[in-house]
Image 1 (cartoon, rainbow, N blue to C red):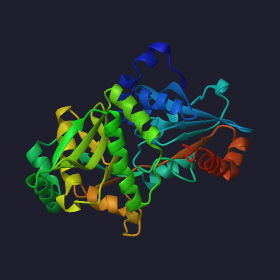
Image 2: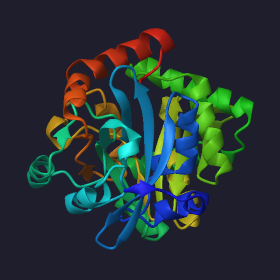
Image 3: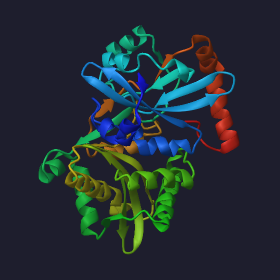
Length: 346
């Protein structure tokens, strides 16, 4: 593993797309520069795997008394444990990092977890990203076959929303649109009870991704009222349902179903082949009491195949300091972030 050259950084997102996993939006330069304003320093690195180099965005944070924590959000962009092992070998000594947290999109299995452990990695106490389990919609079929692949109730709801006059538009990301989208997310938070970061946080990376040509805001409206919104991100042939929200009022119009369908149609027009709906319960935790079960019921209408990744793993670089971090430090860091900044640590 080595630091990327200035020339490599100038073409960073192209390198990310050519990683074995086809690219990940949280490995882009826009995401790295966004997190710079939230306590992290982006480090642009190049590792190796059997077929060449792999571009790796690492976020660095200084932890008092321990040194530097390194975190590769949804990275490195590899597809196997062997590729991961090769990509992260030889962390630059001058980095002074005591731990490298990784969360590659390697398919989860008992064999994969055993191999990660055998190679000296430790499963993190908690996954950083909530997308360890997700539903990925294959967009490669033509529109008729894609629509036919949805569950009958989802197809019915899409057509119902259209018949009743719901419209969907890709809208400029101006301040009124940001305010509207955040209100939709707040309404969803009040129903579902999840943690919602500040409007400024979301607006920051929405703007950066839109400016980079990697994000677009979509709003669904009926008779002049906005009912639902989606901020979708995309990179290469992949896209993600990054953020969404909807009102409880007029829920019978099924605006979110038509909204997602129109987002998929728009993405297909850009050559996107897969749309990651991002977060659902793992297969062994599919139960009504799970906090993501409501999202699963909605998302599974578009595809009921759950994809599970190995999640977040720690690579201890300085064992004693890592042990302190793992036993006490990370918990304290989370508590301080919430109490002092009213925010999440990662």
